Length: 111
Image 1 (cartoon, rainbow, N blue to C red):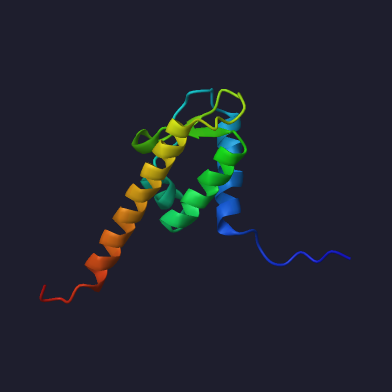
Image 2 (cartoon, rainbow, N blue to C red; image 1 turned 180 degrees about the vertical axis):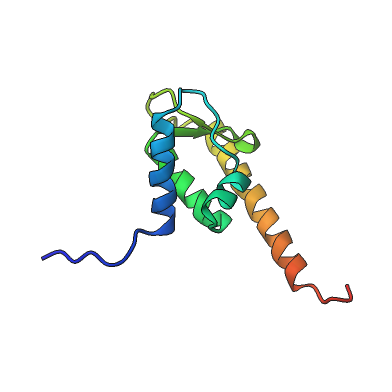
């Protein structure tokens, strides 16, 4: 017997909603920015990133680094090193922004 426990993980909810959006889009169309997705779903940036990562792994979207994410043309996902570097840079930038925001929140009021 299989027991299903609770609601879907938040990243899975993001991926599912974006899959539905992607079905209405054309290859090359730009997905909303990470900030727009955070506002739309109300989830943390890492949760949004995890949802987007699932879609990239499925080959539904491609990342263009800081330019954003775009609907894939349906070709198999590329293992090109340049794409990997762009993805890593994008993730580093997102992490840098998160660290800065956390540091700002934890700074003493007098600083």
